[in-house]
Every structure is written in C-alpha cells, then in structure tokens.
Image (cartoon, rainbow, N blue to C red):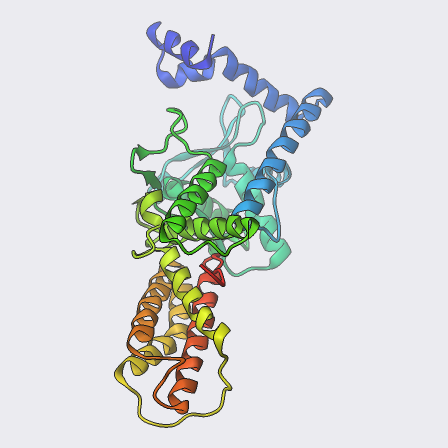
Length: 387
C-alpha cells in the first residue's frame, strides 16, 4: 500500500492528517532509518552514500549545463552535528527546554512567534538544528558580516526563527543572517507542486528552451553559415539566456509566471533581444575596429542619448548590489540594448559622414558591447558573437 493510501485510510478511521502521517508504517520506517543513520549503522550509511552519489552526480550534470558553480558546498550530514552541540549548549544556558518525551524546544511566543522544536524526542536533528550549526560554521570559516540565504518566500518564517534563535544563543553570526526572499515561479498551467506531480525537471526545461530557441532562430533564416556544433551551442546560449533573463527581470520578491515561448521573443523584453543587440554591435566591429583616438565635435541627439545611458552603468550595479535585486541590471541592459538599436538605425557607423564620426561611433559600438556583456555576465548569461 502506498504511503498516501495509508494516510487516507488512517484519516478515515478517525485520526487527524498530521497524526496519520506520523503513524503511517512508511513514515515510521523512514524515522527509524534516520535514527540508525545518526547512530552510524553500517548498512544504512552504505545505502545513504550510494544514493547520495546518484544525487550529487545528477546535480553536477545539471548545474554544469545551466552554467552554475559553487566555491564551497556544505552538507547537512556535517552541520547537524554542530547544531546538536548548539542545542546542548542552549539547554545549559536555558535558551531551550526539554519536554517529558525528551524532545527539545524553544518558546518564542514572547517574541511574537511560537514554540519551535530543535531536536526530536529520539534525539535526531531537524532542519533548524542543521541551520544553526551551518550559520556558526560559515562565520567561523569566513568571519562574514553578512550571510545571505537565497530561499523562496515560503521559508520566511523559518529564517525569522533561525535568526532569533542564533541571537538568543549569542552566536557571532546571528545579526548577519539575511533572508533574500524571492517569490515563487509558476507556469502558465499553474503552480508547480511536488505532491501533485506538476514539478518540472530542470533538464526538461533546458531541453525545451533549446528547442524553442532553435525554432525561433531558424524562423529568422540567418543560420545557414553556421556549423552544426556551433548551432547547437548557439541554441543553448540563447535558451539559457532567455530562461535566466525572464526570471531575473522581475523583482525577486514578486511571484511570476514563466512562459517559455514568450521568453524567446527576439523583439520583446527578453534575453535574446539583448543578446541580439550585442551580436549586432560585434558584427559591426568585426568589419572595423576603433583606433581609440580622441574625437571632438558636436554630438547628434542619438549619440548623446547612448553616451548618457552608458554612463549610468556603474550606478546601476551599485543600486542592484545595495537592493540585492538583479532585476535592476536586467532592466538596465534591456534599455541600453533598445537605445543601441535606435542608435545604429539612425546613425551610420561604417559609412559615417566624416572619419571623426566614424571613430566616435565605432567606439560607442565597442563600449556598448562591453557593457552589455558585463551586465549580462553579472546575471550569469552568455552573449553570442553571432546570431
């Protein structure tokens, strides 16, 4: 019998859903396995290591595909021990209290929260235990003033509790705990839910984005001189750019709907539009490079507009950093791309009116390309030399 059916049957027999879930045989077996794991039972540890290797190998493959990497990785299997040590110290200080069933709690009702368990009655750790240990470990290793947790808004309460517990324990890391809460992402079909089987696999999303990028790019009819391997790389670059830009262009605190088809619109508020603008500038520069000599003379309105937009880049990055909001950069590079496209439409570059104008405009093409590449790079997005 499946775990869901076991729970449903128990509820029908008069138990609450919470009680039924705790008493379901599969839940009891899982809990016993956790006890055996913390006790170091050889066969459980062996199985755990085998299953973990599958997970980590899968993670590595997917992270590499989407262009993500990490300087340091912490494992719950290490931090829970530190957390349990903190629980013991908290008991000694009177920060925590122990119930008759041996479970350990903290009462935060005076702080406007509620009571929170930090160690189960069988002695095993909960997520909060692990996070307490991790907060202290990171501070010991990096002596950081600020520790930013980039986690969905469903965990807002968890991080309020974590920070408060760490403060009551007097941990040096406590005041630097910052939850960068972001809104959840939904699909046009609705919210993704694990229990309903509507969660989308990351690799499936990448495959879909590459396929959509290939379709849209081929419709433009400008890929005939690309080698097959170069085309595949281009489709991946455009697809990942579309995905990341669509997600990052929205304020992180807001919920959003991700539409794969809309994200690859070459004429909309999208990553591919910005990528195309970069490639357009690089195409001009492949024909001729600026000499970087000083130029003088009056500016036409579109030249002035582009220069003013370029000058904003430093302050935009500063603002994004202060607000911890990458959408500030996404909005800026899109505006810059729009301005650049208007510039090359209105102002001849390679056939400019005078050699001085040609030099100025080549330099503007180069500056714009560099800023777009830098801004998109901060968002983790590649820009192709050709599209």
